[in-house]
Amino acid sequence: MKILLLEDDALLAQSVIDELQDAGYDVTWAEESESVIDITYEESFNLYIFDVNVPGINGFELLKSLRDSGDQTAAIFMTSRNQIDDIREGFNVGADDYIKKPFDLDELLIRIESKLPKIQSTQLSKSFSIDPAGYRITCKDKNSKLPPKEFDLIRYFINHQDQLLPTDIIISEISEKGISIATFRTYIKNLKRYIDGCGVIENIKGVGYRFKLL
Image 1: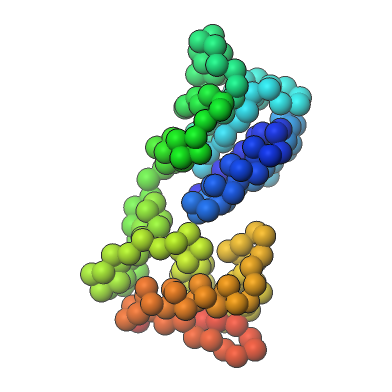
Image 2: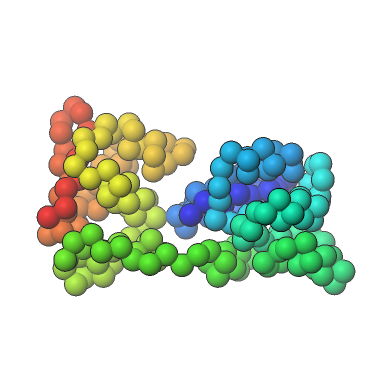
């Protein structure tokens, strides 16, 4: 799930980004409204989280502009502007939710989950299915919730079944910040336990990995 965050407070933005990435979300950060306009022209997102008092046009004007252009992406305002007139304006320009600063990061996650589209599970074989909405897989009637990185990893493998994938490419796809080879191997080891009997991850020494459904 892709989220675009507009927040000019770097410390707060990093806290939010860390929390969302730990929860498995793909986050793009912008510090001013003009960047958002450029980014949304190039990419699509599942959710916008906008501060209001930011460099350039404010968050209210930004969202109104996006709505006027036909962009109906779900949007949450995250702002210190907490007067009733501010809240009214936020919803009038097209917000789906409004959270006042300061806030609890767990509350933000709850609000985000309620706004994102519910994705149905995908049946990959008679014994194996994946549910992106809940980071869950079902393997031979055993239903498991995976840690975010292991889930990103199995989803990437599923999208590239039977392909020999270089290790560095896989790492770059599942982690923007990068991870060590030791950490990556731990993810592989954990994932093999979850999919035992439903899929196999082959390690081609010196080359990479290949995933096959059973």
